[in-house]
Image (cartoon, rainbow, N blue to C red; front, side):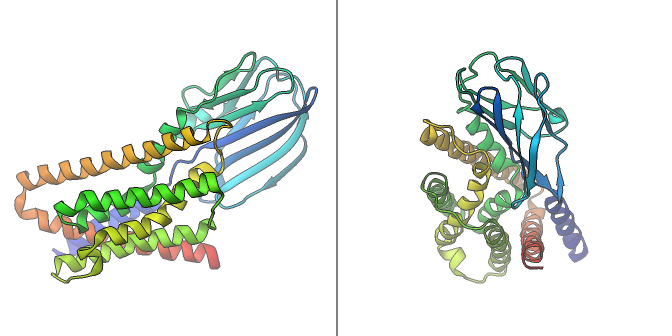
Length: 322
């Protein structure tokens, strides 16, 4: 039994540790003089390697004064170029081989501005007319952020394992309210925290919930069990800064900041609720198919969450300070 438990925990830890959040790329093109443009190209970096994505411009747009920087998990390239971006097609090569979306903004002096969201299945836009602000795309980004943000999902799973059924709604609501507060404060009010410490605390919060779930199985009382909404709210504030990371690179569309933020947050909540429903449905089915194995599964999941959170915390501390 113990060997099986360790194997299951190790498998889950390996799967989660190998997973990465899907973050959008961002291309901003600003016309500074007739036919002259400044370009900012931001793309996510995974395991120290950039995705093989490159903007493809119409005509002959030679890059000049190209310079690169790599803040956090993003590669930022800036350059200038002289060409005609009033018509033709702009595309992103390599996008069809990824799960990443690309936000594109083109600000022109005489022609209408262009805003669009490019996806793996639609990696090009025409520059001959206005595309409209991709505000609704923020809902999709929010859903993807929670569904592919495995650290956030593990925290929610830890809450489901830890709390009693009658406490679940209040606990998840506290987490939602808390991360909505810091997400809005970061996106609209400029309240920010450095990314690495936030990621470390998020990992520690997962490890804590795993440990608390184990204590519950042993019959030990703790604050997290008796008042889980306090833990959910406190760590939810930190997770909100983590959610804000998905918006830090692409920003919010001018003139529709609040609406886009609401859509992003709604997407996060829809993904979160869908995950909770999935877990509860899976538990319900498991209880009826194999009632005797339910305690073992809960125990295995608690150990796996704790081990994974601890692994992430150590990994992120090492990456930050060593």
